[in-house]
Length: 242
View 1 (cartoon, helix red, strand yellow):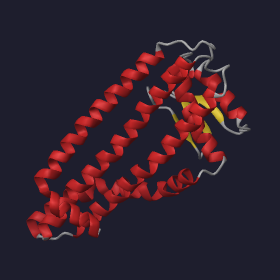
View 2 (view 1 turned 90 degrees about the horizontal axis):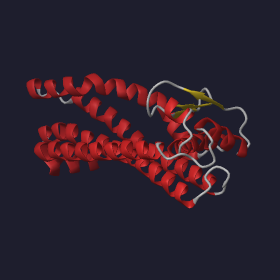
View 3 (view 1 turned 45 degrees about the vertical axis):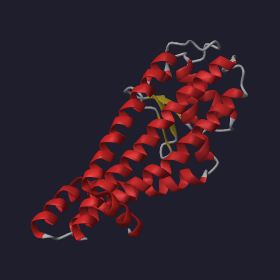
């Protein structure tokens, strides 16, 4: 907490507020750019004619993974890998589509399955944190607002301190997610690059790389947004006490 108190002591309320606005603006731009790229490459037919589901199955089998199922889930951009159920969950736009975007996303999610099968350290660490983060996320929902009220009206910093500590854990979790996501994309692109029956041209590979890069950027801005929020609430706590 010493480093955090030093940062918030320098930044102050107004600066922390402007920081949150700036990060929110960048997040909006990145999210818009990612959706734009996904839509663009969703309209580019994969020359191999494979669907996202078929690409996912091929990647799993190529890595000797036979106990993971590829299933379709409702929603848009709801694609994810669930290590508890060992399922690669693909949205209809990815599961059924025969586009460059679908192949890229399907391979990325399978990258997580490969991480799980190979006991990738960052994924194991992240998964171990999930129960704690679930509790921390619940705490932040009520402790931050109530804590600020108590701080201003009674001078008691304890509830807000609990909220800031919980938010610090959530923020840390956001940053732990980054190497997991970047590594999954790296694995996906490496596999796609070495399998010309999936992506048959250099152009398709570059398009897949571009799509996954912008997808990764959404996780980066999410982590920065969490950090900006942490600094904002911590500024109330530490500046009020100074």
